[in-house]
Length: 265
Image (tube, rainbow, N blue to C red):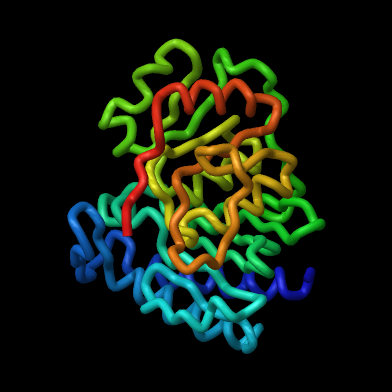
């Protein structure tokens, strides 16, 4: 596992370098759907990761935001679950809050995760049973046990929609792009919690889920259930990640705001 993690870190860094060749430069932007852009950088990173990660584990399946889904992955015990550029909107806006997210799943459970923010140079990595490294040094979730004054990372779109207004005065909201990056920050103790009531693709959260768990935190869906990966419909009904000490209070506060926003097939 340690060698595989080291090789995955190298591939993830290389994808980040490919992205930085486009960052704040010239590239093509298209819309996959409203408010869902994709760029040359997304495709370049996806191609690189596809080549390098499958070379490491030729027997593994593949699930990526920028690759057409192949149902054959459902029959594989090992599956790479990848978002080559999470936070494309921030990338386009020139905000250094995007990341490369690489997860490896075994029998539905994440066993390896690497998240890299290329413009800041931050790298978060974990293997099951190995703990979390932040820029090569051991990291854990925060030790805060009081929700009052806790730091919660939240997405721009959800803050804009007013989804965090009910919590005004309860904790401090830090607006941040890329759910993968937000999960990594929780794992490294840089934020106490993050959550999203909106649906999340597996590639958005796979690596980050392992990071939070390995760092001693809790990461569940909006119903409080552990998250399984490599499903035929690779979406999750939202996510809650925290340091564990705040979990019960956060779960109650979030669920009181109503059901998750879930996409239908």
